[in-house]
Image (cartoon, rainbow, N blue to C red; front, top):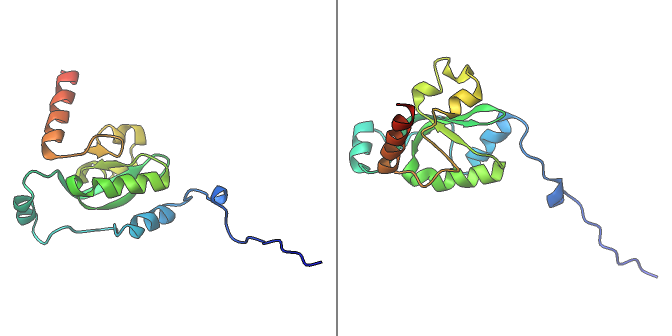
Length: 145
């Protein structure tokens, strides 16, 4: 009698484990062509002129709960938000985008809860545009006043 059993090798989908190091997380960003230090234009002024209605964050910092800062570079959130959402789904988390000064120069060492409050946008929020951000800031200012 011939045994016709097929033996499977390799990882099963249930064997998938989330990244455990920042280097693993950065590899996920790189798989989407989001390399550390990414630049979206040669001239900030020129890029902003060409994309006047877009929410642009030069030298952005991306935070992930449990890890802190996991990526940095230029983002046009109005265009890049879909990719950032895909990355967040792949990592099974929410990603938070901060302005440069909120995620550098020692600020990145603050507690994650404090940092996420400063986020420009996160992957759970609506599609980001410059107009959307202006409304978000106005609502926030009226709440704290």
